[in-house]
Length: 137
Image (cartoon, rainbow, N blue to C red; front, side, top):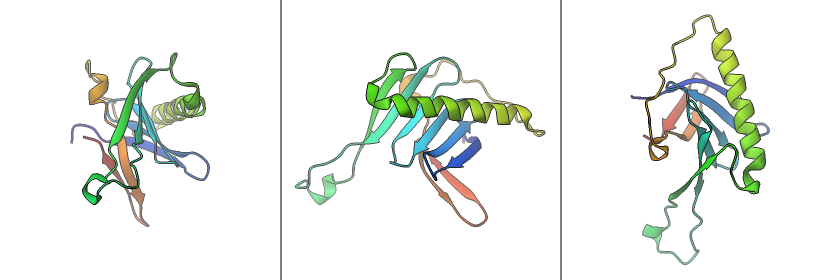
C-alpha cells in the first residue's frame, strides 16, 4: 500500500475515531459516518459525507456516492465548526503520541498531492485481536 494508518485513537464513545496516516495527513471518522482528512502540512482539508438518495430511486441507484468538499481551516461552513475543532484536537494528540513513541516510525511527507488525491478512512472495524482500516485509495 502507498499509505497506511500509523496511529489511531478510538473516541467513538463520544465523537469518532481519529487517525494519522503514514504520509503525515490526519483525519477523523465521525460517529455519523462523515469523514475529514487534513493535509500533512498546511490547512487544507476535505469533508466526506454520503449523498442521501430519494426513496423512489431504483435499487441499482440506491448505493450512496460520497460527496467530497474541499475547505481550509480558515474557511469552512459554520455547520462544520465542531468537526473542524475535533479534527485539530485529534491531529495534535496523535502527533504528540507519535513523537513520544519509543518506536517512532518516520512519517513520509507527501509531495504536492492535490486535494482530490487525499486518502481518507472509508470504513473500519475492531475485532478481539485487531483493528482493520479500509482507506479510500
